[in-house]
Amino acid sequence: MQKIQMRWLRRLSPVTWVGALWLAGCAVPGDPPPHAVAPPASWQRAQPDANASPVDARWWSQLGSTELDTLIAQAQARNQDLAMALARVDGARAQARIAGAQRLPELTGQIDTSRQGRMGGQAAVDGNAHAIGFAARYELDLWGRQGALHREAQQGLRASVFERDAVQLSVTAEVASSWLQMVGLRERVAIACSNLENAQRVLRLVESRGRAGAATPLDLAQQRGLAATRERELARLQQQARHAETALALLLGLPEPTATSAAERTRLEALRISPISAGLPSQLLVRRPDLTQAEARLAAADANVRAARAAMLPRVTLTASVGLQGQAAGGLFDNPIYSLAAGLAAPIFDGGRLAGERDLAVARREELLGAYRAAIIGAFADAQTALDAVAGSDAQASAQVEELLQARRAAELSELRYRAGAETLLVLLDAQRVLYSAQDLDVQLRQGRLQARVALYRALGGGWRDEASVLAQGER
Image (cartoon, rainbow, N blue to C red; front, side):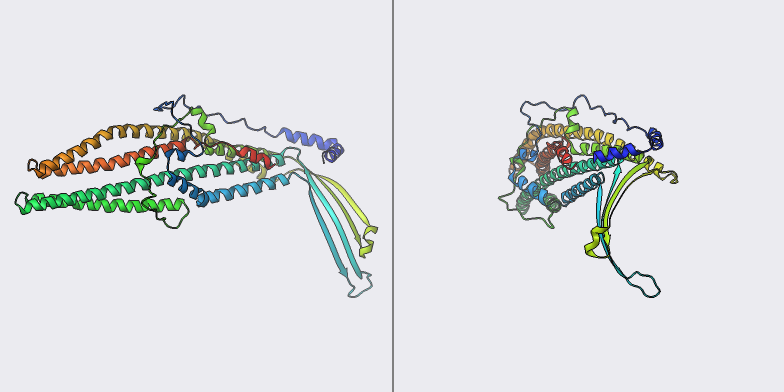
């Protein structure tokens, strides 16, 4: 094909070459690569730890829960957002094949048969006619328009693969975070049940003391109010737990939550809270699939700009055909014919359509350049926010250990003193409230510490690596 192309190029007249080269001088070269966004020198509040493990592709296994492993496997197989992302990859792969096919010659075959008869007059038109023909058409890619369109489609394929990876990372992190939310709410429900039972037990004690004349109606009303408050809080937490189960079922692609036996349920205290190696801020640019996706979209826009500029230049098309025709099938080879042609078409007046398409492509490229830079800045902000959340939740949890210990001791002592008549009910009620708040906060802080680590895993890319470039190369 290259020999044929060079032969036809040598046959073009000098006038054609001069005009084409003059028009080529009007084309603007490709834009320079975008200026990089300078990464931070280091992460703030990052805690270096020699035992910190790097983020890998199965980061959720660091939590140490087989229940979570099963749920994430189900989400990766059933989640509908991920299924749509996979379908978009298939569509982009087909589009890349279409763009690549336009760079190759187009060959068509045709078989015709007809019969003519005379309805009157003297014309001798009676008889059958048969024809077989083949036609080839090829457009010389002198200015790189077809190549630019193919590169645009290839970059679109890469972007769709990166988008799929970003969706998968997002779904995985959302499943882990929703599961932790559900586990935490279940434990908070259990604490609320325990405190409700404790409030009812103390209520029975106050009622007994009231019958003996050792407790006032005010004491009885206060304790009954506390028991009612515990019952209301229990109902609220149970509702939130059901909502969390429904949200998790949605991520798993299920119409309703699935029942989990009490023996299979994981407790937050059984999960590992391990240090995470955040690495250097500059490494984040190759860790996150959404950043690579934005970069691929920008590269596709660059190729589209080149294609739009090349569309304003002349096009050279080569055509060739060969055919057989005759009135009888056996005489087809008696009249073989062929034709060869070359055509040059240049836009003269189109009302500014081509210039508008070029300007549209340039504007789209500038938009994607801004989106790429914004994605980089947003990625740095996500990682820094996640690191701050990890450090802050760890500091709160460290202080809360002592708070819970003292709340338990105060509640035990206040009840003993109340039974002995050495303390008022008001002190016991206050100690109960403090203990319940400390227990509930303990679960929330542990859940928050785990969710902060999930957010950090997600912000750092979840151990993702760019494996789509090999795939894109194979689609050429």
